[in-house]
Length: 85
Image 1 (cartoon, rainbow, N blue to C red):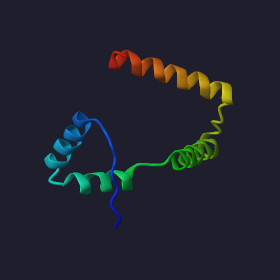
Image 2: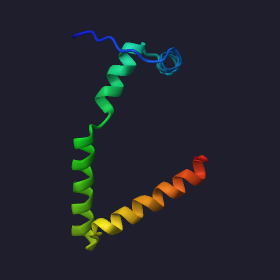
Image 3: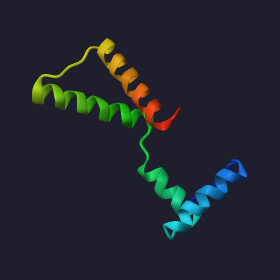
């Protein structure tokens, strides 16, 4: 196992350490678990494509790029409304 040094704001480190401690983990163990469970952009894109293919096979749903963009914009708008951003 290799060590890595990263520079983040003290507040971020303290927050991550508190989250880790609440789960009974060290900061190192928490970050390792986080890295194992997060998806890379390529993995997210692959899963999105698999979901699109499954929807198309299941019910014929195959939105165009323009429709996807419109739906993404609508989702962003709704999320902004509920999060106050």
